[in-house]
Length: 389
Image (tube, rainbow, N blue to C red; front, side):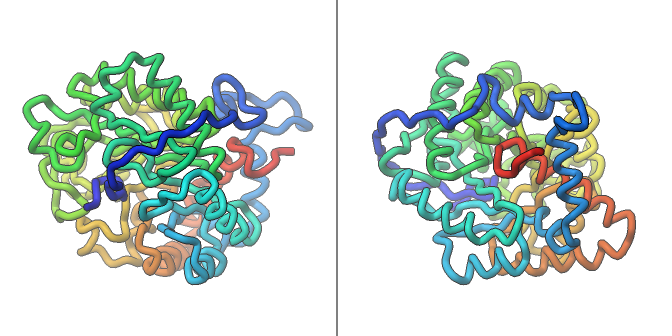
């Protein structure tokens, strides 16, 4: 069963692990948040943004476009690696359940790293905890659900998230598509299929959820692992799960809604990305699902004052996208202001890329591609995947 956020619940079971040593050269606040707040000092000491801009300027268009697409992979098969190389894909999301521990995942991510033609590939995973934990086995803790974590202190959440982040880092994973920042009203817990019914949320109070989300982000950031607050502007008030249901709508959430507070807290804590849902929010933009809405993504840029990576929820296998031609899905997201379009269905990657490529004949779209590619490459610089010099 999928669970809104391009993920499938993994099988229960616990694999206790020993502490993993922290990665080298990671500051107390984490490389990503520190880099985004850094300011230029001299031409000999460029910022990550300056480095990213220079790198993207030297990229062919095909590679710039590839930075805007994230593809689902399972075992780094020859067919998967061929797609990554041919389309110059910039990031992948690990699908399936991997129970062979940190060492096994490290072997997998090493194969993926070797698939990069020039710019390193970002490796992402859904590692929320509870039913949504892709990576298990020796070296990985069994992470409790957000519902359980909501009863912990913020200090404990941050400390444990740092430990889980070190485990991901040791396995060669750079980006966890967590935490869930959706607030589920108390009366909707059982009816809210994507979050409440699966125990994926931190609670019904926006302030308390915001505190837990911020703590999780800070912990992961301290371990050198990027995070993604999801699913903006929130899927806690809907009934249907967009992985299985088309036309899911939210007729309550507004652009100034108090339920946006956890997303704002995530940004303030240093989250590297914000994930946009495929629900339609009729009080914000009744004509477009959030992933295709410049109004919704504009709230992330303006209301949240966020200039990092905006990533989509799954645009590949999700039932909510079935009526949209595959060649339109990624480019419509990019047109609306998004940066990285996810397809957990590897078979659609070429259509995602082709749609962006055709649209990039328009100079305005070409500029959008450059902006998004620069944000993605900046994240790679901040995470230490590309040297900044």
